[in-house]
Length: 314
Image (cartoon, rainbow, N blue to C red; front, side, top):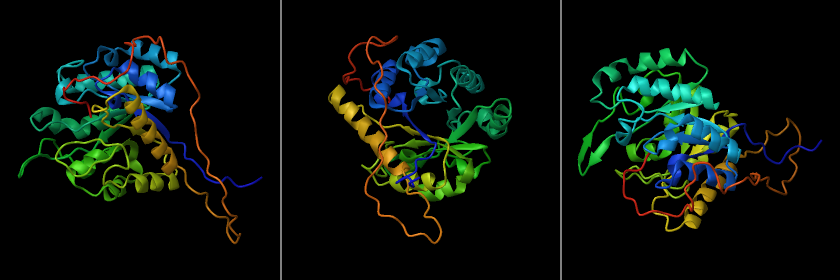
């Protein structure tokens, strides 16, 4: 049997529902199905559908798009979603993941003003992780900056590799905003890296979430390293399409991000020892099957861009 031209790891490429903001959670499922994503990560935020497990299940079943991860509501704009108690939020995120078949809950480190929560966070995450098969993957953040001032908004630290967690999420827009070395960070995470938020950035004080390849982060290098190491976690496209002028422009950005991820997750197979390498003549691509995309439960019609200027989930 001929050797494959490339090998593709088991990692699935998912779409974060935050990537269609200001459009709805339902729109994200529709777009993920149409473009051929392997699944979605649900950002639980102010959209009521994102908080409703049965509504999410119906969307997943209708579009035949699995829910691979749940992002707990730990943003500034979600402080009252599900509860004001951060531990209740995590318990509900875990329950949602278990009921929806998602393998991962993404969680940010606490805000510094959440004093008791931040003191107990590391041990509490270990305790909750020991009660379920769902992974709690703690995400790297960044210092907040205004002009020449820097504020450390997260505790125990925005650099989550300084603490002992069972699983990590690396976000490449956040490494850009933090102006830290993304490759060194994943080296520190090692085999505890279980989840990737794929985006790009240029080192701005703003969390940009650019389409991968449009900033300065080593997006391609990171994916190629993960592919070579047989990474089995999820790669989630979490980009900002708020400025898209039309539904077509938004979908083009999300299609480009998906193509980028799949291209760089494909790696050459190891050369057999003492065997001459055959010339490679073609590339292998992956395409998603067509799925139903209209009349979906929870859908709100056309998915064109809105002029909303609210805070974007990230």
